[in-house]
Image (cartoon, rainbow, N blue to C red):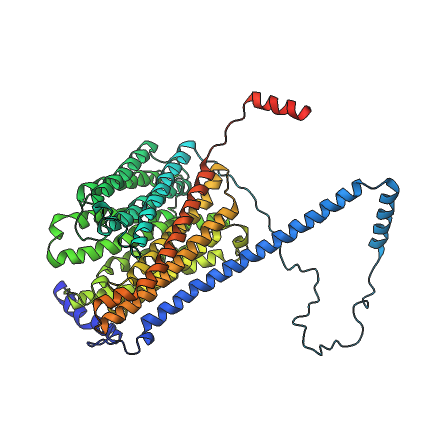
Length: 602
């Protein structure tokens, strides 16, 4: 079929696919019965159920450890009691215990031949297997991965920079969240909302997430290729390019120098050129490492990582190429750039990390390589054409909007394939939830991958898009994906690999504090803005004055600030945990050892 015939077919057939999503006249009547609204409620419920499961597992673990601690205390008390007894008293105790070992139950002490009758209905369950414990004992084993010092240094440098940008970027976000409640906090131009908001988004995008992903990927590339990194020197050079671009870009943004209204591409082109150079160097380093691998296969993690680097380099060029920056064409490019940045850089790269770090943390292979391949190619196909669903009902061609909606629905294929693969890999390893917080971080990230991506599909439908677009709901959705998926998975990978590289694991109570503050904060942030955004959208549709929608958001913005505060506090705990894992213990001098020996002798 020729090109001239394809477009008429698309314009005729594709609108029929999504015809049932809405009509020409949209009202708020029975809005809660819309498929997109119902689907979103169901997905949010899934997140809540998973949180309850994790909480119960951790509570059972706490009871088990408390029981073990109590047993040790009783044992210690008995040992201390034995010390104070004389030989005759000890012999008497031993004789009684020996006689007790010879005693056997006849089987009728606690029962009889009569049928038991529960007259008052107080017995819930009867068991004939008393040897089955209610709590299983679990032991933690330390595992240290021998890693070249240069590789370890590169990984820690990238992760260290990413932690700094996480704290800085979310500090700015925390300040912005407070401005929704106290807009009169300052009158300084470079602290205005319009300047700080892109500082927050670009810092956590290009600073925190990007550097963390690349740092973790250096270990994956080397490990799965069974060879050394092509050039550690180029890795450090790329580190400088990436960090300098974020520093200069933020200074320019706070000074009012930006690229206009293009979301996530507010950095001017010379700044993004530095970032692109860093990506090109990184891709070259990764490619050369994989090319000289000592095994025949290319592990699927490398597929996602290398593909995401290629896509992002192309994306930066298209997003800043002057020819594409005019009229409605720029609107299409903006949708392409914005969604590709999230889906083909952060999401694809992070999926590649999961395919290595999740099986590695559980010490088992990935469930299905075929599902991974299916998820990879469908991600490459469907994600490239869904950006325009951000501009439904805009002056763009109707068929282009419909294509974006259809491809958004098609994204359910890679999402379901990936989620199934990850959950089936976790199958049989659920006891890890009570051992450490690595699996809970992974589990939350995977569940949000399904929930956030599925909710994005529902939000692309015309009715839900009409209700939620341009409201605070979009902010909730972006945090559901960039925070719930990307950030939680990155934390899981960091907590999984760093202790194996440095031999130091942070206290579980602090890792738990990090997990629960981040999760509860995100949930409060997300639910408040989803509810408020829905109310705001319905208010607009009903034709109410705009100021009413601002007033009704006040309470929801308070909860946004509460959730954001918990998230920021969790980042401070994470920063300390990171420092704990990488800090080097002070060497003990010979003089201090001799002094300690003398003190012990005295």
